Image (cartoon, rainbow, N blue to C red; front, side, top):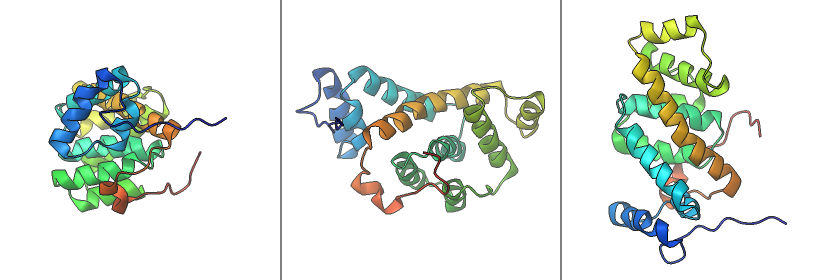
Length: 188
């Protein structure tokens, strides 16, 4: 028997999820569907929101944040997160060439961002194992060890959202429906 995940609001969510959902309502005017699903587990909701804030304040600028987030979202084929992060990138003022390259899996407009994308993809696919040559390429464009660690931080956040969205089949929020996305060559 298939069980459907509930998309909670403040009234239906476990009490320990109330403050985060109330903050979302206050700051965004709505509760994202992902938050509503995560609210079933107050600890997971808190972890996700905390990781998101930490990653936003990491060593990456807005373009680099977008590259890491969307590289992982596309690789994980998350049809909720790719549109959501398209909306986020646009609200942050990220260049549309970067946004579209990530969504369409084409080359990024700068070598540095392309190397960040490639390294993030290798970390995801190889479970954190990089060759010396791959590391050297990353360092050659100006990144440092801190950046590698911050990719792992971003990946930690994205594993929560991407996997939960797969399990729950989270529907798109109205605000991101215009950015709906389908994987080119679905693996799943």
